[in-house]
Amino acid sequence: MPKSLEIAPRYLSELLLFLRSRRTHVENILSPETTDPYEPWKAFVAGTAIVITVLALDAADGVRHFDRVVFFTILLCCSAAFILSFHFAARVLHGRASLTQTVGAGQYLSGFLIPVALLLDYVIVRTANSFPGVECHLGYFTVHHAIVPTIVNRIIVTIVIGTVLASLAFVAIRSFVLLADVERLGPGKTLVASLLGAIPVAVTYRWLEFRAHILSGHLHHIAKILTASQE
Image 1 (cartoon, rainbow, N blue to C red):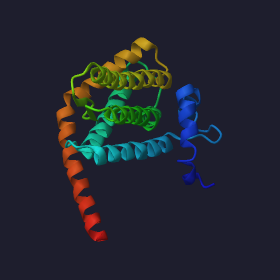
Image 2: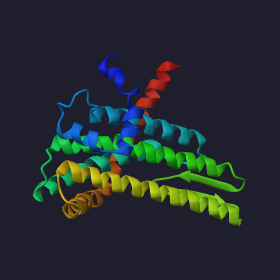
Image 3: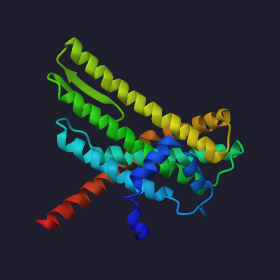
Image 4: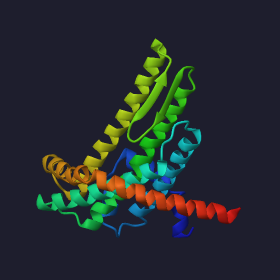
């Protein structure tokens, strides 16, 4: 099978392997000469396709305006900014990963963890909405909800919000551990590097959001042109 066709077929098995143990993928990053590795960019491409699919399904089901293109663009911009900031902070703290290796770790995280968390959140929101009087939908890193105020409905919405928070915590913890392994830093220094890496993202978030809106506008324009050309 050509290498380019192995991206999707191997994705599920590599995802399950990543969730069970990160060791193989850490070795893929630190030792690219590993026999038949599943490179980080392959996980990123396959995972991005899943994220786009979930956002498209959510957009089709949604009754409230939520620009998924802007959300996805902001997510990519913030992730890229954090990885770069984290890498340089880690180097100051004597981290040993190269920029390529740190970016590779970011690609694994974006390709494996974010799709799993988003898909889980989407499924549980859709399940909750099947109950009478419950209406939940995903927003910008939040869950919006409107319910008929019964005890059962409040419990359901609480479970939805708890699941979303748990998925975010899971992504954060697994990201922390993988980045610590790749940089060969202890937990303390990794935490400091993470905090230092998050500061530029927080400071420039409004600018990143502004650029994401501009980019999403271009994408919308391109989509309209392509759609018109097919009519």
